[in-house]
Length: 324
Image (cartoon, rainbow, N blue to C red):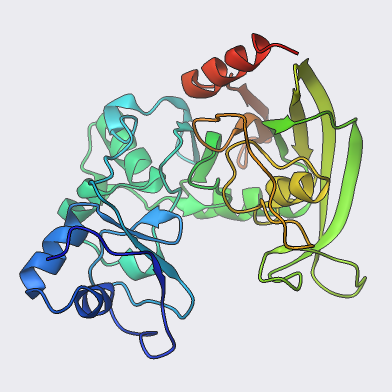
């Protein structure tokens, strides 16, 4: 089996086939067992995420990358390291580490518990830590219900609903934009305080999710931006979401000319040129620092704050000490 394979986009002929089949063909026909071992060893990325499911059906245009070395799970991807900020019969609030998907890809929903343990999501980790705290098997607990999510490389506060009532009531609060969601983002240059409003579409015309000038297309997205701290050549921004569209903050800041440091997706300008990231960010410099909502059963106001985790705190401290 070759030690390396250039990244490739899934062709129309390969679309719909499993990752194992496509990879085996691209590698020149090694044994099925060898290909499955390669995938199970976390050496294959589909898009931005490692894929350990050899039966994953690929879509046309998805980019597959064979890594030189296995990509380890984040150290925080363990239930004993997952901080739980609140737990009751209706909701659980946790601190999400970077590098972990909030929920599982649809193609992986039928995975066994043993297989999930090899590549856990935040949903898995949360259910396991809840089971441990309650002293009950995870399989006997009500399933967690998703009401919002964070990107894989974003850290911060996440709430899961644990009851039908909580799912309904929290969903209503999110739709009414009454949930407090504030993020910290580090960007190059200086962006003055403002409210960014646009309509987001899956393809703004260059293959990227983004804003459209057409008032009848897309979904309204509103981000309130304030300055948290000015650094030499960079700014720590406080971004409060009024709406919660996919990648909203990343898109709005990139389109304003100040992409989030460490972003590898929203770095292409409309004219085709790329933003140059010289920040040295360890990962996407975006963190969900504040979360607040009314309890779905009691109506009591609940609120949590989470400071920057160690990797981003060290990154910001390094920027502070850079020469102006």
